[in-house]
Image 1 (cartoon, rainbow, N blue to C red):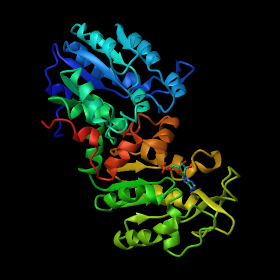
Image 2: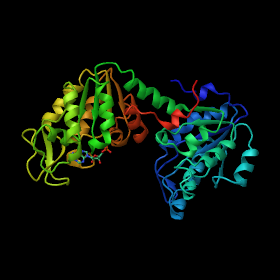
Image 3: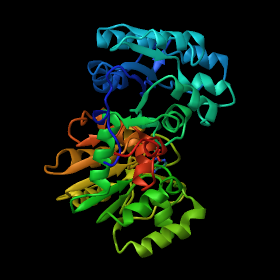
Image 4: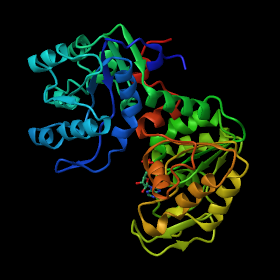
Length: 396
Ligand code: AMP
């Protein structure tokens, strides 16, 4: 890791701007899951223990109207955090101004303050999400050092991450981002072989760069979900009404030609007459009949994918193997998750999103080496592209 981490900074007496991910589900002012708050505690406690003055910034939802403002008020999070820390968290209901500045100037070492939802600033010409230079500069002026620990937004250049980092002398990443990068980089940049990647989900177009990047790194790539049908069409199979991206057939052919047999595609499918949770019917072979859609791996494909995973030393997975939201079409995703979970001596990483949700639903949270907390950010890492929210942090 070439970036400074929280452990490389002297925080004593410093005003520490700490970007966290408190984007938690809230209904009628009640927090539905406090996982993200709990996950941020080690970094917050470290700043407190070192005698820093913690100034927390986070976004919550999207803010495009005054209705959104009311729904996405961060105040309930401050109350919950106060309970978890067992100490006062001073909530400032604004994102800028006199009250905020005066409250910060009165902070003692070890105090914790939380700024209102950074996306309230989006009502002001999208100042947060478009990284308005004046806003990043202003927030940076409120602190001495900046720590970014919000992995979920690390693939975006916003004022509350890149904007602050570019306008402050000292910056570092917190424990959550440090762990994400260590895990993803061990899986992708320094994998033990055999390295089996699993790429699923709806569209080829969303995962092109991931497949391209993995073709250089993985020994096998198991393709599942809606995207497999564009590959099968490229090979000349009948795909019925299954998802197809016509404009990507040529690219799929190119990948197949260049993959040296690394790309593995389904041998059969669970099908349905339309996008409905009908009883599971399995095709005889690779072709999908007319008026049917392939919605999941069939039994032979499940066996093929389980066998391909056997003996893997590294597994990286992004995207479900079928429409896992449907009771009758989640078997492929469940089988793959179970195969990885039951394997010993494998370094396994799930890159956020639907596949992470499926593994967690199955109770496999502890059976994977790492389940990323950031869908978009981990996807961008899997594409081999830099994450602006981390790039902007000081190097060691
Ligand atoms: P992604 O966000 O790209 O990982 O895609 C996840 C979405 O892909 C989920 O909502 C799935 O329902 C959908 N999906 C997976 N397999 C299929 C399929 N065979 N046909 C249609 N949609 C699918």
